[in-house]
Amino acid sequence: MKRVYVDELSQHVGSDVEIAGWLQIQRGNNKLRFLQVRDGSGIVQAIVAKSDVGEEMFETAKGVTQESSLRVRGTVNADDRAPGGYELIVKDLEIVGQSIDYPISPKEHGSTFLLDHRHLWLRSKKQHAVLRIRHEVIWAIRDFFNNRGFIGFDTPMFTPNAVEGTTDLFEAKYFDTIAFLSQSGQLYAEAGAMAHGRVYTFGPTFRAEKSKTRRHLTEFWMVEPEVAFMDLEGDMQLAEDMTMYVIERVLDKRRDELDMLERDVSKLEAVSGPFRRMHYDKAADILVKYAAEHPDEEGAPFTPGDDFGGRHESILTMNSDSPIMITHFPAEIKAFYMKRDPDEPDRALGFDMIGTEDAGELIGGSVREDSYDVLVSRIKEHSLPMEPFEWYLDLRRYGSVPHAGFGLGLERTVKWITGRDHLRECIPFPRMMYRMKP
Ligand code: 4AD
Ligand code: MG
Image (cartoon, rainbow, N blue to C red):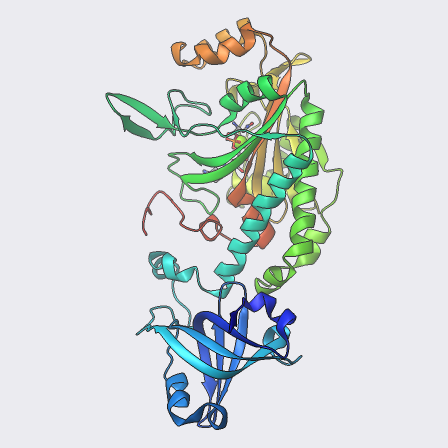
């Protein structure tokens, strides 16, 4: 008998097939049992009638417990009332692996309990839906760049130098020296862009940030395109186009998962370009005014010149259907590699893209300093050691060009699209300040 997946059942109506999976739940009476069988691709109701299978097999079916694995064989029936539209009229059933006292029951559990059982929690419907959307987002991003002539360019995790500042580096013993876990593949991607013109790196990045917020992981995935001969406006347009492509793709392909998560899809459908561009000074004005009007609100007070906190990002996008791009941050609060605006030399030629619905910063990007002399002085100003950056300076010694790129946080994007309220549900096994297990 042919083994098929639940999401293929529509092609097998009237035929006998085998489904292999796990029992989610069952109900019924002493003559008829309804088994919800989950195989990863979907859930099908397997109907076991005592009159069809006999006394012994009926008792076996009745005894299958939550999350036991099993094979069920029978005839595929189309029925609009069945969840998913198809059901299996069982002729034969076999238990593969018992599951006794499965720890996660349909009742409510606390988040600590669920995170301790993340390896099992992954099987629950909502978690399953989130990670399928994550998968779609990853492939949408890859397709977007591949279709535009970018080359996938994988950068190392072990690195000798800091990218985003020295305060949140993880160190690893590396034979008789020390390596840092990469905070960003950007510097290497710049070398890639000088070789291939357009590249993107997509991989795990690490930040030893002592922040326990819903928006921070210590290990997260970032996609970072880098393009030779691109300016700030081109960079922002690329970020906007990619974001629109990803949203449209998830709306097109992952409706079932969004429905399972009870996501208000009208919010995603409302996202449209052009995303608003806003100078940092304008954003600062809005925040100062807001804080004056809401004197008691926690997180609202703002001093111009500072970086934004989570609450500030939410205030800035409060009345917006689409993400906004904030440009021209004070250069001193941004990374050493950012080029400055010749018209406003104390400002970085960079942007942060802030998502709607409290999503926070989804993207950070900039034009890179391409002058050898200026870059050398920036490295000194930031008190960074020169030697590990010698190779990076070579990119300015040999055929330097204006270039730009950005980094999109994958989990932040998945959180935004799925409407979850914590990044920890947006990656299979989250790594946070107080959690490295399971
Ligand atoms: O703004 P960031 O630090 O930018 C860079 O790393 C640049 N080198 C990117 C580039 O230009 N190639 O990080 C980029 C994005 C943020 O906008 C955010 O979405 C995400 O990475 N991010 C985090 N996501 C989860 N947990 C954290 N601790 C994060 N820190 C940054
Ligand atoms: Mg940033």
